[in-house]
Image 1: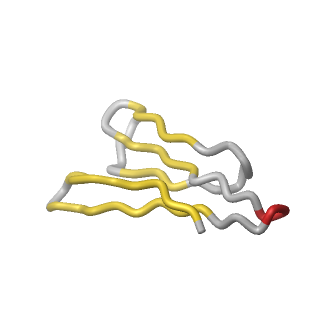
Image 2: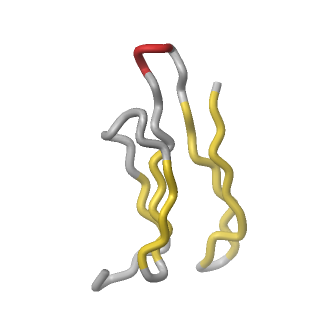
Length: 59
């Protein structure tokens, strides 16, 4: 909360897919399900010092 980075990417907690905004920081966990062979990802489009858009994808 003190430094407010643009984005925080997390992935240690599997199956806990989600996005939350803490102040100015967007925190994302794609939540891969390795046991089922599902790989999830977070794709973002950056524009200058902001996140223009983002997408949670899986495959």
